[in-house]
Amino acid sequence: MERELSPKPATPFTVAANQAVYKQLPFQDTEDFEFVKRGFIATWDEPIIKTATGKKVWDFTAFDFLTEKTVPATVNPSLWRQAQLLAKHGLFQVSDRVYQVRGFDISNITFIVGDTGYIVIDPLISEEVAAAAYQLVKTHLGDKSVVAVIYTHTHLDHFGGVKGVVCESDVEAGKVQIIAPEGFMEYAVGENAIAGSAMIRRATYQIGPFLPKNPQGNTTVGLGIARSTGNTSLIAPTLDITHTGQKLTIDGIEIIFQLTPGTEAPVEMNFYFPQFKALCMAENANASIHNILTLRGALVRDAKSWAEYLTESIRLFANQTEVMFASHFWPRWGQEKITKYLKTHRDAYKYLHDQTLRLMNHGYTGIEIAEILNLPESIGKYWYNRGYYGTLNHNIKAIYQRYFGWYDANPANLHPLPPAEASQKYVEFMGGGEAILAKAQKCFEKGEYRWTAQVLNHLVFAEPSNLKARQLLADTYEQLAYQAEAGTWRNIYLMGAKELRHGLGDKEMSGSPDDPDTMKVMTPGMLFDYFAVRINGPKAAEIEIKLNFRFTDVEEEYLVTVENGALVHQANLQAEDADAKVLLTKDALVDISLGLSSIEEKRESSELHIEGDAEKFSQLFGLLDDFDFWFNLVEP
Image (cartoon, rainbow, N blue to C red):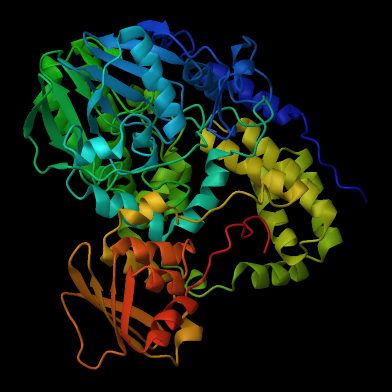
């Protein structure tokens, strides 16, 4: 049997489900469409932004199909509306001396016009799109230098393009300040390195970079139009924001900061510009409910703290704010409207947290609560409280996880069989593959797509080469995608369908967090933490290594041991009985770990000197795993 690879149309059940959305939501409310075009100045002239080597980084024409007025049957009308708003790109004036470039990446880049130069807030993911945004600003607002860059928080889409707007040498010379919340480097680098490979692989499902951009494919991420794919960079902060109420005057512009740790990121900050009565809410207030637990994977966030910090923002700034902008989406104008928005958005997070806890204490599990809990109409009717990026469903489960973890207290779920083994048993109990397929087909024809997906997932895990099962499961995921309001859910379902039909994706894409810019800003302790998760425990179980490290450039010492399969590092400690003393620069260690230079080359260049058993140093690197980015997700 030939595999059916083409996307399918929406079924009558999907058409009906999507048509019902029109009766549920206030499509007559067009205020966001006024906000999104307000202050438009110009956009980029060329349709494509490329790297210096000609690789496409950004395509402004990719989402041109969103200009269609008729909503396709294959897209939830609510998501289509959101996508149309996100597709508007260009340079916009937010207020006096405050400008944004939107639609050049998944996030926004903001330019504040100082007395002599520009203050940049959140320079996107890639250097190339950030440089294009900067050039657009210089063309229309004046050719000035960037005097400061502010990172609102620790996610890549808020710092990765920094070298597109400033040179690291200017930062080192003190010509440019890099400002971030205290603890920025620890979390910006640490999370991406330690769990980076698997996180990036999972993000391909959430973002959907390999999906076609069309009404049967990717229709944005819900938080932004798409993710740029250029060169990423990182320059370490030169100035930390350490407390709420801290004030800075940069190039004649006064800024008052509010730290909001544990909200959308482990460290994050909002800030206020008194001269312009303008409030930057970073990624703490959006035109969508955000993630309490992002589907790519991360530490669970604290919905209670998130709501409390929004309350603090209202108290500190709302009564004196005339315009509010953020790191995603579009600004809002008017003190009364902004205050109402912040309060209503705050109440959504607070309601989700408190009511999830209430139902938990009644004995409901996360999955059960997610099926019965909805926002009250008084706050759920607002577009910005819809789940385009973080849904109520998976946020409720995240809140449950934060308090109770993965175990729901049902003994049957304490020690279940792993998926592939359990699926073999399920298929046997359900009468075999042919019987399951026949029953699943009937469920599909009734529009019971969630149940069909659950059943067929077992069959695919038991019989990965069963083409009929793969095809029907792909068709099922596709219909779930067409009905999804969240851009992330849509992309996840469509990526699952794609890999069931076509196999794994673009094998040239790397999921490794090992890029020189990131690793070279790691402290030695961070580097050793990363090496520790790469240690192949079984391989190292009978090996003992004890090394004294001295980093000659940062003047730090570490004792590093491998014993019982675990790598342990201790700062400011040396052992008299160490196997060897290793003197080197931090960059030399990075180059060796990345394979940019060999141990022998570094020793010959005098960047590395080893006293004692040099073989133990080499042995350490032989114990490090390289991670396979393309692990399976929809099959064993």
